[in-house]
Length: 173
Image 1 (cartoon, rainbow, N blue to C red):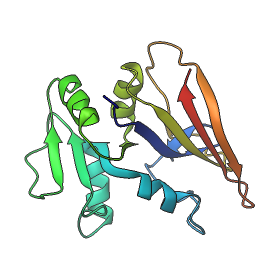
Image 2: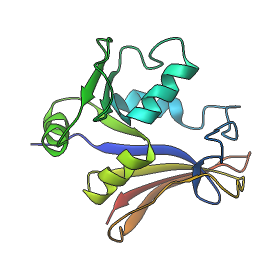
Image 3: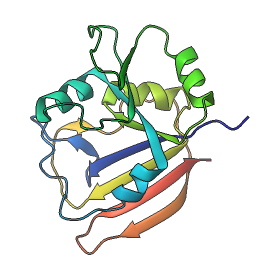
């Protein structure tokens, strides 16, 4: 049986931050597509943590990914009244494996940092797609923290944009 791929897809600063010191992400380039259209065609499911979900709710009038199944991982969030959103809590391992085994497209691991750490430490990330922005933030939330073991990766694609953004795709070795 073929398992659906979990793809970590994030913007990251040159110095390795996914958010600025105040949680801001206004440094992310939005002047062109940067491969997002093709990426969105390859996924039909989103995994995100509570903080990322709440931030998305604050910055959008409703679910910004309406029609795409969204799973929010949280042990503290109250039930969500949205048919496209399902709350996952407790021991997530069984549920992640069930979702990966279902038919469908790839799954986007959107964030945040705690969820990302859990997925990396459990070797659930099948592809790392990092959009490295040519900016040094100096401080903020690091992309990787509390990783328990080294993860050797193989570069499978790179693309350089005229803005200086570099798109990198890796798979575990």
